[in-house]
Image (cartoon, rainbow, N blue to C red; front, side):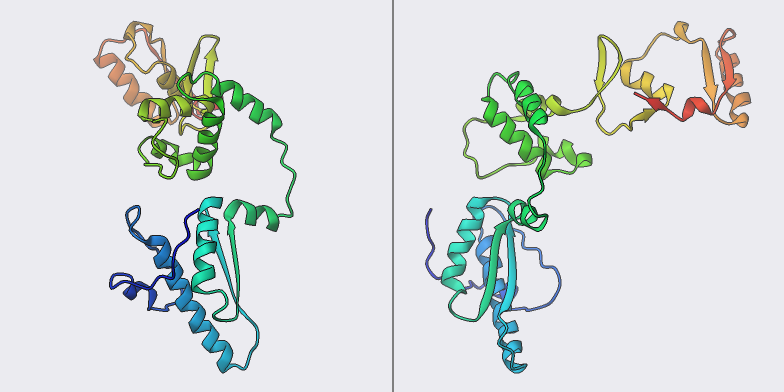
Length: 261
């Protein structure tokens, strides 16, 4: 791993690193623009500020800081920078870890029984011909760890850096990977659809919408359910207006409560 020499703040970094305000600071920038070194310089500035406070209070307690990263490579990179920038200069207690390792330690390394899930995932991954099973498993773990369940669709357009350019995982492959673990709604032996953001309880009308995405012929329409009594007359009027004289209108709130699917 390449080591970095002692760094100093540039003119652009100085306004960020020198303002020792409490609270949250978000540093944004393109790849290679210096976000990591800026954050570390900011940390160094905060160390000096709190070290001065310790001195003013006649305290010998070190300044404590926790730095969490997404992966081990970045943790090692920051650790190397910190050794040259901070450690040994002032009295600090600096902990640098990946979030996963830090969280596991805080939770006293709980035993997670996921062997069946991993076997199932590897079996599904084998269906992606363009990629190795290990690569697909790693990609799925990244996907599920990176995005919230309601934001999984963002995976299709989010750039992922730090893993090289080969193999190339484009939109088509990403869609295939997402389809491996998305829960399916099954109503008949040969009919299924991806659940996406649909709830586990779907009213009959929404189940029909999911399983029949195209328009169906109105000759199949036999009855229309309504949840409120005031809708009964309105729907009945529409049906008569469009000459659906054999279609019944039925009042039933239960139909709109949904059923497991």
